[in-house]
Image (cartoon, rainbow, N blue to C red; front, side):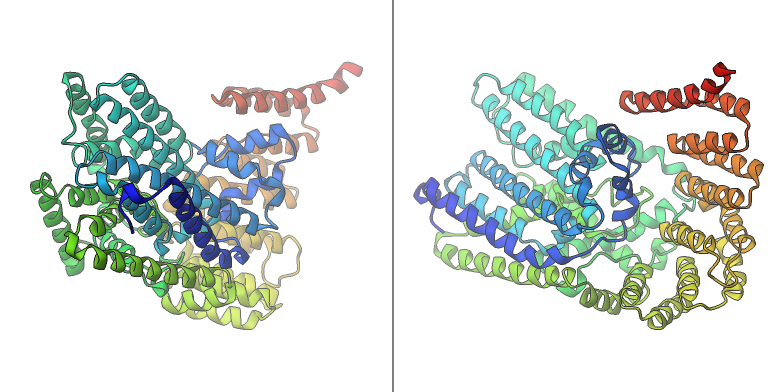
Length: 631
């Protein structure tokens, strides 16, 4: 590739369009993909959108994170008419967002290189190299191909825009030009807000800025005011460390996932090295959506791999700090990657492994790789550029293998199940493929074999009941077998989803042995399980299931009582309306009015949702009072 001064704007545009088009073509095989395990639980309410008020309710009622992620949900709401029959449209939108982010990565790389004297002569080719390697990264494919992970990619869009604006302001300040501070502060504040409202990892934008300032931007000229600013930049890092320190008293407590925060942290050491390996040397068979089979060790002493991994990270961090002036790009890559993983790959109660978590953190190591051809000695530069080109072709080849698998669910199911024999989700996905083709016996065999190998995955046992019902088998013995295990089972959303399906099947009366008494026993076992009882969403759903069972048998008092408990776990307008409806169906109008009045103290703080509650409850109140006025 030529030096920056020899690349015309037209040439750059052609390269950008060529890389973007090539990337889209590499992702195109995946457009025939389907919904994945996390898509429906987070987006099922798209089916309820019929007008603007219901769309606003969907946007502001998210529960995927503490900030509800309304911006990401708004992007899904724009496609409500395509849910759930057209996952391809959602995937296509996700791919386009990835391509836009690739352009922003290029822009960010250009601004970074212009601020580094050793790279400024090669700013354009460096930015194009960084942009291409990042776009073609196979480990990032799942961020676009798992529909719900638009939350991560859209958050990254705002983070990248914020970084670009910050660097523009930073350059102006270093050169003593006007509007530097408003651009810097405005970009940082607005982008952090928008990114965080797409996904909470957007709050790491100031942390990324901290990494930049103390590595790549350290040599830039500063004045006294900027020295104060650099001190203030320690606040986000300090806040993150303080928050983690506050969790120390609880790190030994076993969470609803069946392990403690400390055990999860131990596991993350080797996982982070796995991410690094897959970023630099991707392997298609190692990539996919299912990694719920990763073992979590009891302690570091029980895992030599974890001890070695964290020791290696400690050494690398020390090298990055000590050699920061001499190896700024290495320090930048290490700091960016590790701090980019600080929320999702540390002590918080999340699953240990997901590839999409590398969407922004991978940018640090990739930027360092992008510098190698252009910082190589002149006599080796042609060979370095050739090696970089070959590397990009390798990435493209592996990416195509990955997307081709995602676009062929039958092939992907077998591939993922073979590589993850103890993964509950991988085996469920394979069994589902057989169900789609009507081969229930094969599906049941897969589920039962996996459950025998991994008895902790009680979701499989419930699905065995579901498939047995489809085969017209009596399931009473299976209910007896699984009930004791449910009282100590770890938290799993698949358990809740399968219970909902079983409840639907039971109420058709077409499954021998699956009667209301059996369903009550299954649900009661989970309500006795602290992992489920003390998890808001699980408790909410389980009490709803109990209410359905009681209402179906015309037992009003326990039905209302369980709806009350569901509402206490998670205040919800639909639950309130259902409770009032139950009371009115029994002719208890006065009780319904009293209950309605009690709901008014639960009005949400969000003005949009508050208006929805007031409007709905007011309409019901008027409807109840109307007959009385006519008497």
